[in-house]
Image (cartoon, rainbow, N blue to C red):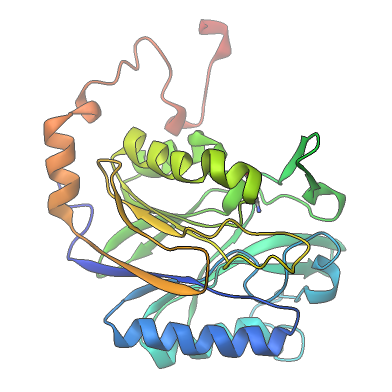
Length: 298
Ligand SMILES: NC(=O)CCC(=O)C(=O)O
């Protein structure tokens, strides 16, 4: 089988402490991304809503207009900061996510932007599954009050390395996206995300390890640092999980950059030991990655 990951890759997750000052968030992100690049990372990830506090009340205030692309500096300072930073760091940069406003539809989205080491935009992912939950006495959150969902799976080819998939936070709870990405030869699934103190304790690590275990790929989750003064308390614990579902590195709760060295051998070793790829029974259940599920057969 052709290698999924053509050469070793150092991945960095920047668990950024974000606040209400967008310019300060961008500047902090810059220092941490450059620090990660200095440590040799060639793929660097920022958290969900890295340029703003996370919360429905903040989305309109912090939203940037990204289309038509490239947007103006005035309408999309984070876009331009990320592009310049990817170039300065000479690394692939997944700019966590930012609130986006689309003028033509008057809709808001939670959007990830990914840049190559030349500072060129190579992918955009709008969060597909909006975070609408209600756990009485614990947490109620309704992104859909403000945001609209994206409508596509986002796979990105990094020519020197291979293919990765991008999604955002709550998207991780929908294993179909991960399964399809793995079936389409991704070696890594990246999720900038801001779980909270209730679901973080229950499911953050479990989701990361489950997506890695099911698909025998690397998984990276990048959270904002925890801020108990904020209206939403992010879980933290950014982590990278290997294709055998072992946690390779895990941040604490404060601002921190964590690193992991990814290689093809671990993918092959895992898949050789537990050869799920050749054992699937598509005669018993349909291949979800083909995108045509015939429920009549059930
Ligand atoms: N920002 C999010 O999508 C949060 C998702 C979350 O906390 C979860 O439990 O899922």
